[in-house]
Image (cartoon, rainbow, N blue to C red; front, side):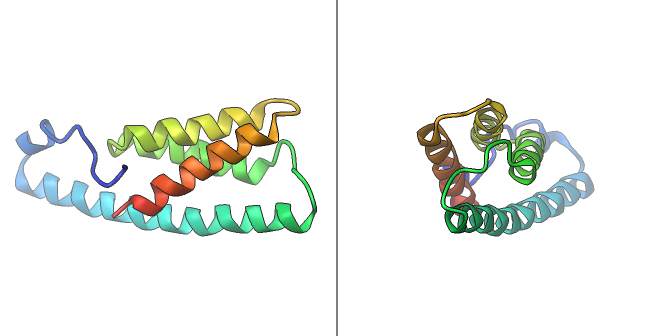
Length: 115
């Protein structure tokens, strides 16, 4: 579950003002993740309407890449790994649709669990 970052011990050593700012940024990150979830679902709807996979989908690759990096910054390591797995799958030529489906379902599950 991706509800809380795990590496908070060093953050506790920061001044209160810095901790508050990081907490605000984390809230913005979570809000952005919810927006990303909507975008992912839209891409999936578009794929379904097109009756098949859209290999090398640049918008989804970019979204997964951004999520992977930002997740690491805010301490959501599992979410970052899952986003990276989706990005890596999408970059494969003729990736197996089952791999894509599993990776995107895992990412949706983790994004949905964010609070």
